[in-house]
Image 1 (cartoon, one colour):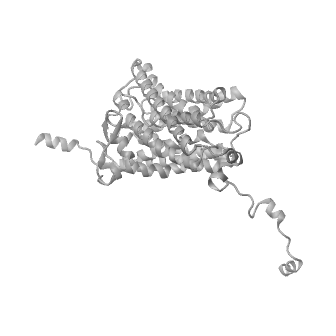
Image 2: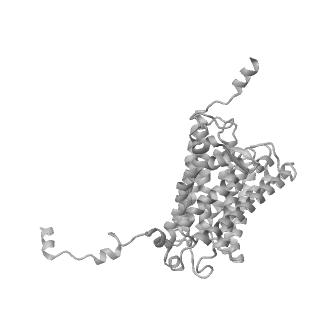
Image 3: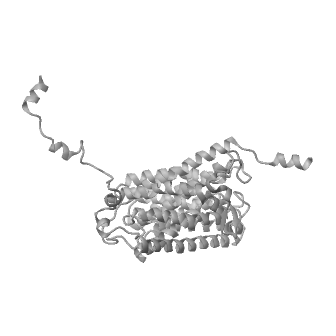
Length: 445
């Protein structure tokens, strides 16, 4: 009797507070995808604005359906060979009880799976920024479906699924430095090496058409990222989620300062695009590390990420790969920085008792982090390039040269982002016919 009573007392019970908290966090992470759409949409030229928005929004449709059909099972089901998960009872989600708890936590399985769904939606959307101006929408949609199936779902299992090789090795990735940002950044690099450069790359001006839209998108990303990061602890009974919230804020602020300082020294000005990009680089870098480091460590990670990512975005001109909106320079580089710096700044007082080099833990954790980074980077880079090559050789990945020059919005969506020809435009008012004299007299009368 006694052991049974003890087990019953120790068994987790559903927490309304944690459940509500996680549903709010899930909604915040969902908001990040539209925020990303605005961020990317403002960074492109006018003729590509709608296409950029649609490349993010279509991920909400495709990945949501695939997650229910088999994605959740592949990512978090029973481990097979430390590479993939599977649980046939989770296919279609029809055999999950409404109050069935997730793996020893105090939240329902449905809450955990919808939170993770929003990560799965966002990750392929991140890739789209590297491909701006030149990819067929149909090809992109097919790429998203294939990529999440053979890259994201397995990698999510490696990093977060019980039995995944990175999880078992002890790689620390609080909220997605490897599974989300390195994964997406490496995929972006693989695809652009296959599809090639935009017409006019390094010759024609390709400046952002709406910096206010960029800043709005960055603000929405920053806001949503609190759910992305703090929510990844699946509750806040022990304060680790609160630590992650604080570290998210201070690392991002420090990265803004680091990026702007580098920009001022290197280019002589503090730009709004630099501030927005610096914020994203800090958010990316703190994502894997924030549960393991102190606020001072978070500031150091933010400054380092802000400076190094600002330096990295220029590499595309040196090496000749056309990463349109700096996905490689911000997400891949930022993800690598944050993941590796865990091995130096982990205090042993946050999400685990693992300490980094600066806190007496030696280099053991650093080498584990290197293994996680290298494994995800290599797999995503190679498989993403192969997928892009297969699609390019079958249905074609790129729009025609004429469509690219004229504008992908009109070619792929039959719309334009801005229409100034209606009532209220200056030209319309100038061209409006004057009222007839008789009508004028009637009005005066």
